[in-house]
Length: 166
Image 1: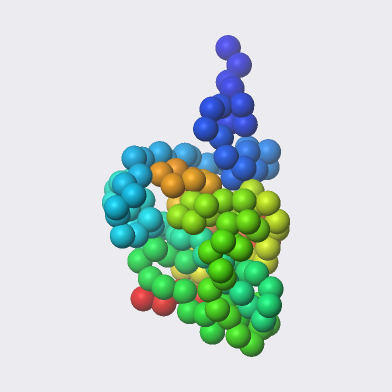
Image 2 (image 1 turned 90 degrees about the horizontal axis):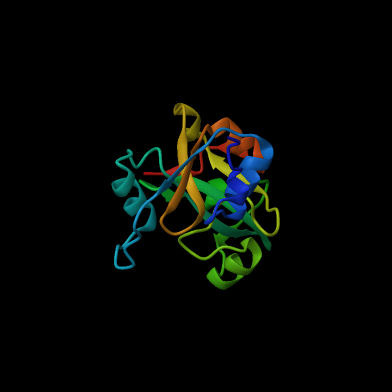
């Protein structure tokens, strides 16, 4: 019996479609999202039983007028100065949430670095390379994908830089 493509399975997202199309090995982790949880990323780590330093959140920032994606561990925060420096910019601020949603095609708390509506410059925190696999949003709240950080960097053309802080 032929195995169904991830693309054809119900619940597929642009992120999982992109991973399947690229032939990248990944694992989907689904969990029941609790809207009252104060942190999407920490909720994901707890629900999956994965260390928060292996679960990465996707943030959209404005660097000198251009949207840029930052992927950092949920256990820490984004260093906006470091992000700006990583892409050769001077100043970074968090992007307007509505603009981030329109540009990526995802809702806040479910923005994936993969399969975005518009390809944006992406910076992956250098700490990702310390792990065999990391987890990032699969494109909706309550759904994560686990993959090798090198595969994530390759698929998003990401720059690796120390952009996270504890």
